Image (cartoon, rainbow, N blue to C red; front, top):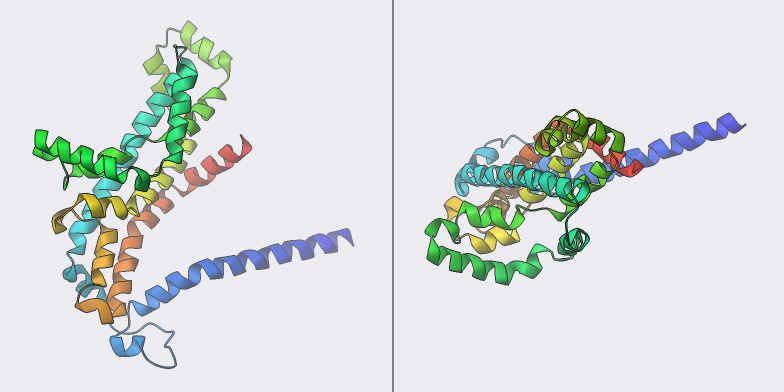
Amino acid sequence: MTQSLLTKYHLHIHLLLWLALLIVAAPVLFAMIVSTQSVAEVFSYPPKLTPGSSWHNYIECWKFVNLGRMMFNSAFLAFAVTVGKLVISLMAAFAFSHFDFRGKNFLFFLVLITLMLPIPVRIVPLFELFVKLGHIHKQLGINTYFSLIAPFIASATGTFLFRQHFLTIPAELTDAARMDGCGPIRFLFQILIPLSKNTIGALVVIEFVYIWNQYLWPLIVTNSESMRVVQIGIKMLTATEAVQNWGIIMAGVILSMIPPLVIFFIMQESFMKGFAFMREK
């Protein structure tokens, strides 16, 4: 009887998981179908739920708003910010976890406070800062890669996660490394970072997707199409002649999903292990 109840329980859980998957995947599948349909097929009644024959929608959306350039900008921004956050987070977490200095706890508290200050709250002072920096040097002002990257380059989340992970490293391992003449930098790169590869993988996926989906700050700090990012490009599709052609708009949406999905599938194993590790801790 117990085994039968357990089997039914597992069956119900799997049914719920499949239902959740269907709910999550349905909009994406529908977008893929619409991206291949003509205007007549999109607005047909009853709705057509099979792929159409208008595969040129992908070419058209690419031409309408220079989507290739915008995807390059988003990719460059996401990779630069992700790498920068990893470097700064690892260094900061190492300092907070393995060094004793005056005001360490207070500084770490200040780092955590920044988690409560999202980008929208800081938009006005940040914009004024980059306008003033632009007066000093053109490449430091608005409408530059520097202004897109700099506000996101530090990560309180990454610092916190790596610090907590470093604190779980046995003290005996640290003492043994020091006795063998292992300096701080060598200890970080040869011991701590290899032991943190799953946490690194999880953070890479999270940060890449987060930066790839940025819309508000790039919209405010850029004023030329050559510096726009892909999320702004999707919005621009609805403001052009493509406004009545949802096939073209959905084609742009599908294209914009490809890079984050590629990163996720590449880092999938480390991402899942990293989350499981953080859950255990």
